[in-house]
Image (cartoon, rainbow, N blue to C red; front, side):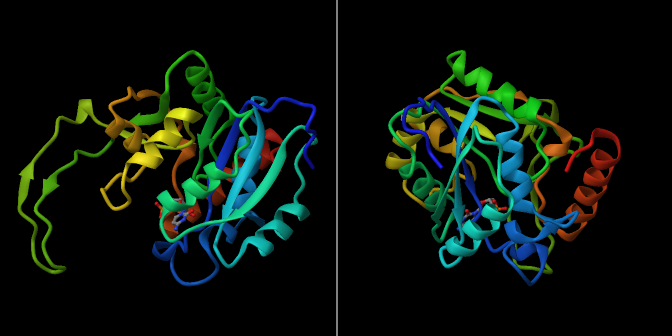
Length: 248
Ligand code: C5P
């Protein structure tokens, strides 16, 4: 699939190795369908829709790389985007690391995008890439919060949790993907930060390096499909796009 004569600069790594337990029992989350097409295929197309992205690395469930490879073969991309599938790990951090290991040295900018955010618009992807190319080592799309957030002291299920603080809502952002990075910076962050130290996204690892991370506007359609209700919303967004934008 690759054309070795063409320089590749921006790649997207899509961790898709999670089981998706919160969505209920069944197929791994990334392989569940939205409007008849696997969620992962939507996520891959969303990255390929950005003209900047010339290589996509999909990180598949450890025992499902062949199946994912077959699936993506059945849903081909336009010629200009190369696609590689690698097996993932036990945690998201490990899966991303395995994806980064598959990138050639020609890559300078990398996006990390959750397969669980299948409907992120191309404009959001482009805005993240542009901010990295403009010199920011780490860029995250994010939205202001609608809900007030409480910090609590966690208790066993059934026991009310004491509130220990209320961060000022105007200062908080809900972070989405794709998160964009200077590849050398993200590799360093993954090498240095030990698994289990509580970083729930890639930018969090870069923050621990002491490197700056900036936020650009996210998009409400870049939400993460986590719980059953999210599937209902995703189907509705997809149906609207198909009716009005000719989206496949
Ligand atoms: O579990 P969560 O919703 O945070 O997962 C975010 C993304 O990380 C999903 O796309 C999921 O498939 C991926 N993941 C992974 N490897 C794991 C766990 C999660 O690639 N071991």
